[in-house]
Image 1 (cartoon, rainbow, N blue to C red):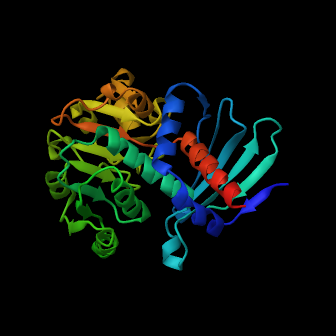
Image 2 (tube, rainbow, N blue to C red; image 1 turned 30 degrees about the vertical axis):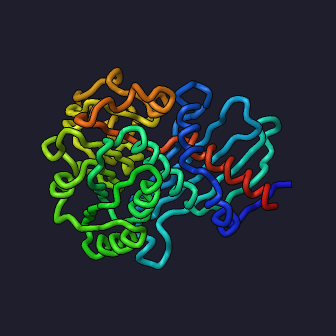
Length: 318
């Protein structure tokens, strides 16, 4: 019989899951070639500022595989609804039967995305992180700050967002996590103050250019999960000493790498996958003067990893 788990069920066990560890192991399995991940399916609703992504895949040898349906309807807050939604389906690799439906309403997607940012920082951030800069003011801004606490001792943070009121609200929430938080007047000021930067917006125009970034900076870009989105200028990727993809094949078709390769500023041969660095950290940052960039577009193996881990905890509590 198919089990159906509510959001309350899922959130009750999520604190007991090592999300960062699970996501890191998923990335390594992916780069080891042990994961089948078909191309992302996307359906856009431009009239309503909405989008649907379907990500799915299987780790060879597992008992289950996962299909994730994720929606983002960004006008929803204007009518009192959350911007993100969706669910995950857990199916048997042996029979194809639907074993479970996780009505996670986008929460597992949000947490696995934030955990990916923490994994990138764990392997690529400079050892002397003096200030974290986050571009954006939504749920991912808050979750990035939350998960970064687990991998860095830095508790100084600055934030910029287009809407000053929302930026202040995000800053207040992050301050409650134990950070000393300030607001930057613009993106250039944020970049000047920070050497660990995370971008979390759905921007379609570059927010950060090469001239804003100094040696010794790491940038994790995670807002660009479709071909039309872009947070980093192509010249910035050319300037970087190391460009890292969560999935090379996926980043070639969407995200920051997609735009930089299209502009001719970098080549596929210049890119390393995050899972390769997890398996062999010598492939990552080698000194604190390098500029490193992680382009995280969101890979189905992350959904598989967090869904399996949550299912295990649900079964333990069942």
